[in-house]
Image 1: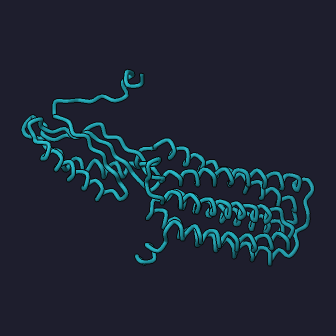
Image 2 (image 1 turned 30 degrees about the vertical axis):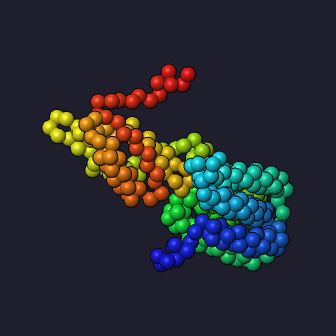
Image 3 (image 1 turned 60 degrees about the horizontal axis):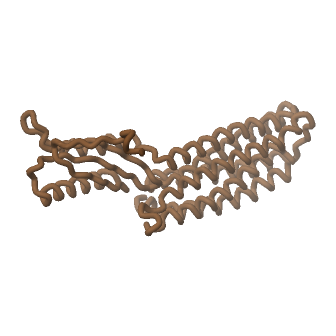
Length: 308
């Protein structure tokens, strides 16, 4: 299983998403053509969005994996946030399109044909999406990939969409209320709209240098506390001005390390190297920047004079 997890790279999982999206588009489009259900049409439209999102996500993951260069000295890791934002925008557009397609059917409902076969095709495509979403969430956690997480979240939304459509069409068959098909399609679109907005929000937060997750900050602080040293009432080694940020798969920590002014530069640099190595070993993908300062020196940030 461990070898399989290492095989599930962001690129491979997004290629799998492209293939599955093409398969589900075919299945759901056939289901809509057989039944003439606007609910199944909305389901098929979301799968088209899945395909576009997976292709764009694949492009952004490729860019994010590019090494740092003179123009991008910190790398290209933030490209994955564009993938999440783009996917969110596509989801919002698809949701509005579904509402537009379903609105007139509320007052002009149409009979649904070959319900059994249409629902079977929809359920089969949902099973594929559900399995892929589970694998992508697993890979996203391992590789800390926002592009994979965004695509997985969209696939889960697709599964819930299909479930809602299946329930709606089932109710139409039982009650004979044809307008339920359109109402379910609109309800599904509103749920999709919510997920699209969530992905756009996640993308915006990443682009604005969001701090590390609270549980990761706990790990960072634990490492720093392990190096802090006090003799009597005097702090020999202490840390302050801890700042963190995320950029795609990378995590960054900036901190000041105070030590006695009498220490040689070699001794101070050796300790700094030990702290950096401990931080990077504790938190995968971390890059630590530590500024050395004498114990009696303080540096203040966010001073109004610094902005002039």
